[in-house]
Length: 166
Image (cartoon, rainbow, N blue to C red; front, side, top):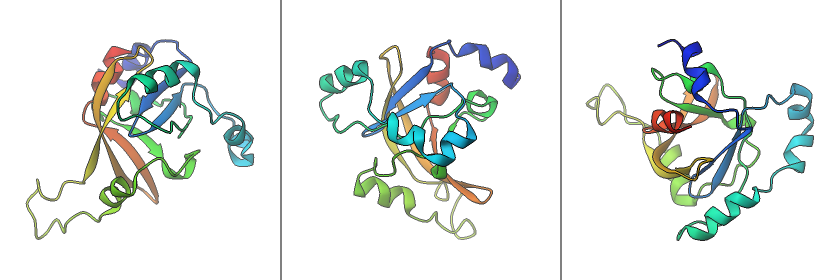
């Protein structure tokens, strides 16, 4: 299946919301370069929506929701082959959404691939629960990857299930 064929699987909802230990919002709207650079969007819309606050109240360990990123979902984010959602760190609206323990895990360097087996050399991640716009819970994994010259947080391990459900 080509990435163009997978794009219609995403409904016309304007926003996609998900919960890490805290929360992130994903948006299908394209942010203008000028808004992103000027920071006007960042300061004006960081509060989570009311429906998400209701979900948070039902969750036992949920607290302190934060808008982490708004981004257009690209074909690579919807690709079943790539099976991941990337969130460039330089585009995050909030950088303090991880606990100290989660930050330590995600920023720990990967083992030397020459000295370790393939399984041991895999990048470490943090298990998180993602809540989609239909309030369905998905267990996914958050990792930190270097792509080119930039670092990204990446949602993997269950991301295709999120796409299929929405």
